[in-house]
Length: 547
Image 1 (cartoon, rainbow, N blue to C red):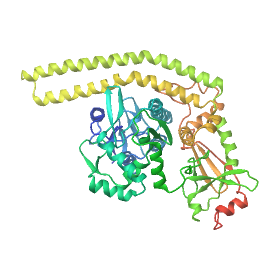
Image 2: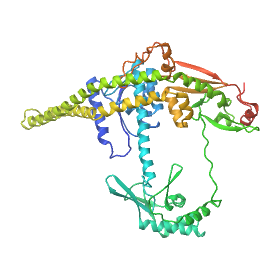
Image 3: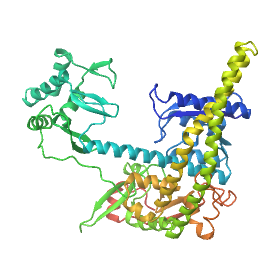
Image 4: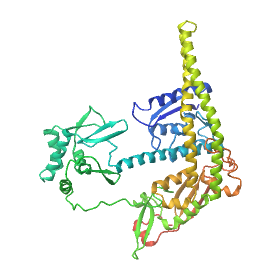
């Protein structure tokens, strides 16, 4: 018999952060299970961000769903389950394939009904977009601090983080540790000390110990790789390396630029001007899988004798002679993909109409939102009053301790639920419609935006639209799930936008499950043909895969 699972998640692995959030989720979920008669639920708790796939407890949960052991999930919000495209697809497919009967949240109940599943898909997509926007806002703040020469992370050895006030911190020299760092650079620059010898000196003679992580008490010996990283770190000459870029820092340098260059020469034994190769990126990197073995197709560039360059995609197992999938030429595939994207592109009139609907629904929902917050505030106030009265009754021996505990748990559950609702309702309402507007805007000139995006942005855009590319033989299969299939079919329904009942909180499309009973309602193939013979011989040494 299938059972119910309560899934509660907080976004950080730290034990002392967001603990109340996790407890409140569990309290609400247990109360909801009791109300619905869902007995003996399995509780799964996770302290991990859902921004990227790979959460072990979530994978365990979906494994139970696929095996038929679980058919109901109770969770505070849909975004507790997913904030990325892959996990969202896993949840939606579990509903559509009937492995999952229902998802119960504080907002609504999600089932396999096509309209309800579409609402869930939009909300999970908006959750993923919110997570990305939040990351962008944090990155913007960090970029501004870097522009001012301020370091936002843990100070390297020889420095310390000093908080000037509640809103501002700085990097200052740790004179005790800085003396060791200066000595390391001087010894290596002299040419008489290797990294191995310096490691032994620091461990045995200096007895140098460094903190483990951010701990103030736990320390460990500085190893060979740690010393090597110190000697390669341009932070000690007043610069700040961040994601391949170097910024001018406002902190005090510990070594001179000349001494730093001498150390680099001693470490590398190469010319100081030599550059390391950078990974080359291609338009469709990470978007296409092999139809034979399921692996991702990797891109490479081929330069012809004429000097013209062409990009191809190859299965990694094909390079080992274990996969028959031939190369895929980007020049043959890109025009067809742009043609597909042009079909989901919104015209200015459609974009304007969609925004107008969103504005109307947002305005209409504001009054209901105010009423909801007012009701939640009243419930919170009443719960506090009732709790005080219950205490008076138990002190006067009017009710038993067991009855008091039961009533207090009920009041606490109601208070927690209403507190969470009141504190997040207005912000969630505003963000939802802002994100919806951004999503609609991304559909204007979709093909051109795709061409100008980074690899990661292209991959996320394709996944959020429900696209899947699979190369098999001399064809590439393009599967179009929702919402791309709805956008591509909107021409058959002139009143498509008018038939959207709600946008944001209850967005629902008119397409029914009977119309599209499978996961990918639209799929077609692109014939790419075999690659040029010279390219084939270079990348197909064993003669496999050609028909």
